[in-house]
Image (cartoon, rainbow, N blue to C red):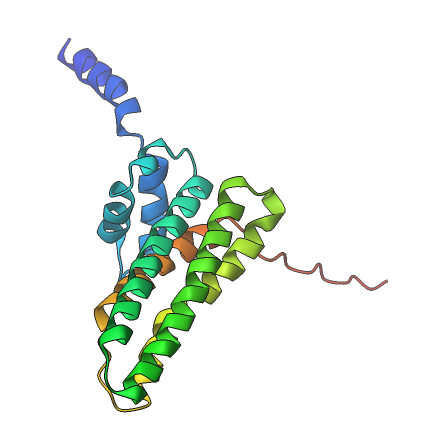
Length: 188
């Protein structure tokens, strides 16, 4: 009787052990990005209530793009505030570079999110391209300061945006099929 109850308990608890699309997506992401990791991936999605309703990786990719876009917008606003207060013209020029790349990133992320949320299957490659381009913003911003031997006042924002954009790009890229291998020619 004890064996029957144990087997019954295991069988009844199996459906409760299923992982969600969010867990599956973050597990896959973490396998390819251990420096960012599973916990970070879960945490950023859990901060957005729509993630609980996402039924697949495509929905999560759109949400990740929207989260990254919000961070890019916040960083752009901070850059604008800093530029208004900066007295050094050369430093304002470096901030201007950052403002430009983050403005571009906002547009790219908005387009990617729209394509992922509402576009046809064929636009996923376009979304991946937009996300990849947006991912350049923090490095370009940091380079503007690094080339002038100046400490970037945006290092923390750049690092956080890079992580968020990496999640969005990785999740979206997981939706694209791997390139097919050409069939070898068989000679007669």
